Length: 396
Image 1: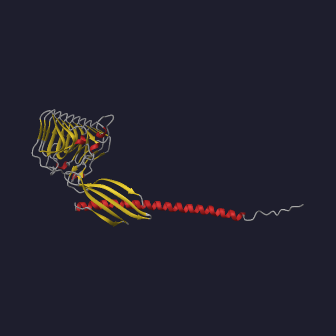
Image 2: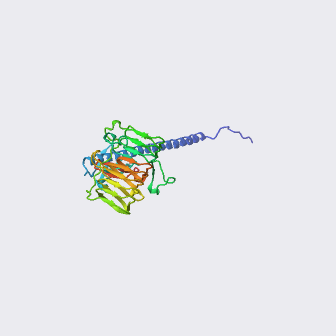
Image 3: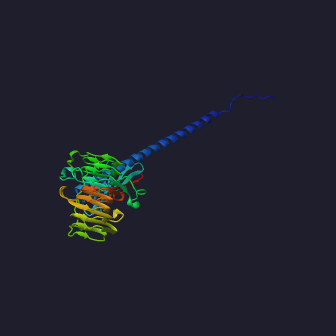
């Protein structure tokens, strides 16, 4: 029996293979389209989220303008702007004694496929200033100085020094709690005698004079405001909220101020006395002269608990004096825009010193406390943002 083969392949195989290839290509194309569409949506969401962020920020700036025109402004609702809408509320919050701060909440919404991109910006607007960015700063421009301190608006004498620490981390220590944030400056001249060490930056509004052996770890800048027709660092004027009627005189031992605000016409401390604080923050206003003997300590670690505000109002030719003897120690912030400050030899400040003119004696040191960098000083200026935080809500 004979069997003959045809030599032909099975019919229909090519069609099946073609269909399979087409199915694979179709699936790949669908996947690529889906990915492309998703990426496009992600990009759109990001763009709209950025748009909502800018809209919320614009709402805050608009509110600042409204507050500076009318301090009773309370906000607005569903205001159209930039392809979206915003609502902002303004409420009064606790603030500086000289003014009332405002809490701002701006909610911006921009439509996007599937919902809205929403951003909430919360901020505090107030009329206070934060000048304690300096270890020491002299406010007066040298054009108004008429005595022997010309070209010595901020004057650190032989072997003086500045550096920084953070009192929230403990006491000042040269090995474990010492930093290079002891910035100093003045709207006039800065003069550093021989051997001065500055662990920080220097900013002189007019000229910087340095003796031999002076070392500076940071930047040195001078002549920022040629001829100083106006101060390079406009510090706020401060007037006590209550008019003081009596002075404080400490003749012996330790005098303690508990938490609160105190108003004095003058402050006099005999040698080897102490003015301590307890129970919480203490603010002391002194409108007249301050006289401090040798070996006096004012404040208690940490310096964040004490703020002393000496004369800081009137013209820059209307001033008083603060004179401290040798071995003076201060734990706190001292603000005296219209006060000529003299610190004796071997004085130490754990905080910050702002004055009209500042003279630090031989071997004196300012250890700038970074924990007081945002300490308020009140004034009736324009509203500005103190603190803002973002919270972004994903599209719904």
